[in-house]
Length: 203
Image 1 (cartoon, rainbow, N blue to C red):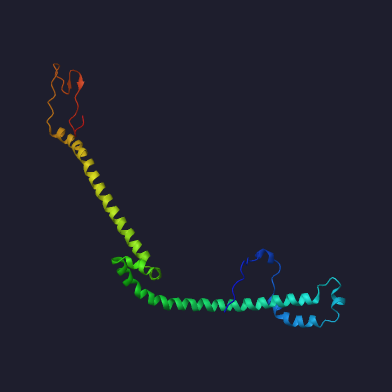
Image 2 (spheres, rainbow, N blue to C red; image 1 turned 30 degrees about the vertical axis):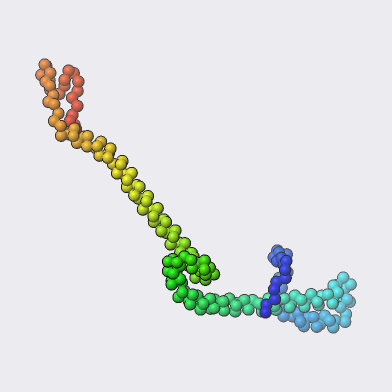
């Protein structure tokens, strides 16, 4: 059993560890170094009166080395656990996937199943599927209604356009009155005004 993290634990700031990265060779030397320090008869003479207490030093080295070993073991366990988790869920979901289509169809026909078996519905994802189908159906209905409304509006707007576009056609087939010949015998003008050319022709 992996022990629980102490209540109220707050991770230390990684910036506080800058400059204190331990080397693998140092970690490996700790057990033997502790033994040597505990038997160092001239500790104060060699390291001076300002040197840390040898008991405190060996205790801190021991704790640090133990956490390094534990971290290494848990890192390996984490890799193992992740691998086992992936394989376990693969095996489980292969079976779950065989149930999903049938439950989706059943819950679509009988939505009461979703409230009767809510946890199973969440596991199979049926509630999400049914909701998506309902949303898709509503979207299709709105689209059809919008297209129908647009078609009706287009038909109403097309009638005046058709009448307006027919006007030039009527004018085009109506024979223009022959221009009157002024007393002076000049064609193309009446009482001094320019004659408007017939539709489809230029002067």
